[in-house]
Image (cartoon, rainbow, N blue to C red; front, top):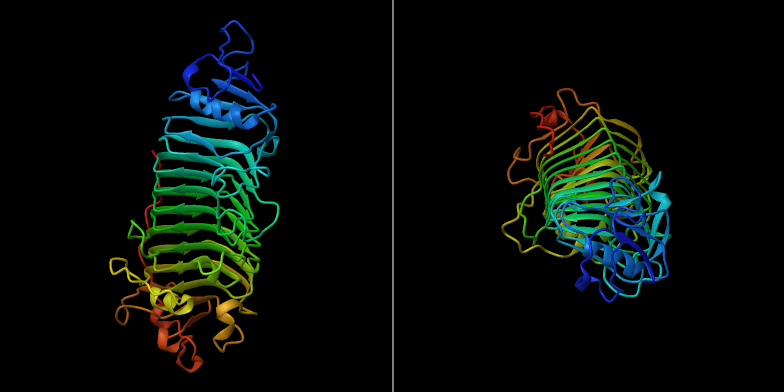
Length: 416
């Protein structure tokens, strides 16, 4: 073998061309290689791609594949498959102790792809994948824990997403770090029932994005030096037609003023630098307890599809997607140094400085948006007056009176 693979299971027909072999349980290099909690152990070798891919093929339901400390040079996308209950773990004190380096990747769209239910991916780093970092698609029961995904430079050619659970249910993303994604560092898409907590996102276009998802709680994260800190959109032309029941609380969001390096003519490429949180078309969102500071454009922006269509020039023909944000409650946040130098599209609206919360004013009928800022709002506010008023400051309003209201709390997200 050109790699060092320890396993007490031998499935010779699935070794992807490697030399088949199993050690007996009496051999110290068999089974978990003497590492508690590990069923299969991989160490850096002459062919790390083959070693890891073979380990993932051999792994059975409810087993743990462990990677020893060191750097693994990966040349191809690693396919984990649909094995249920799989844990993929780096053995080290921190994610930096186990590095999967994709700088020489020549095949595959992503770094790692998994589809099995009840999967846990934890405690290692991924660097310079050709496409997305780690993708889990269509699974129920997904955990990303202490994962670090990095691109060395923040540039358009990078993968869109670093940590990427999609079309998933019961998702936990915690204690991860994501750097350099050309769309979103952490991207949760078309999913249900998720917690994103204690993560750090910097150097991305979007730090954290929760898209077309029902039931998500985003808390105790730190986002800085992105274009936008947190983005909660309902996008048209996708299978899931709702983005609702989202809690954004107790996050540290600051200095998200990076120039937008997203791929041209994508939705993300139109996001203006300098915004802490953007809500696009989303319903039933609660934003509270956050510290948002040093944002050049605004702290929180609320936008409907009609305005987005005008900005992008890409008119949505999806009549099944409700393009109006509704039932949003923003209260008890700390805002500091906000809106002093609006950027991107926000710099073209004829307003030299912007308030802490801005709303495009789009709604189905007067008052239907149910945008609340608290009983006695203490944040500054601007209503652009709908599409007809966006570019005309004389039609704007900074009166918080119509939004001096409250909405019921949402139930916290719980995971099985």
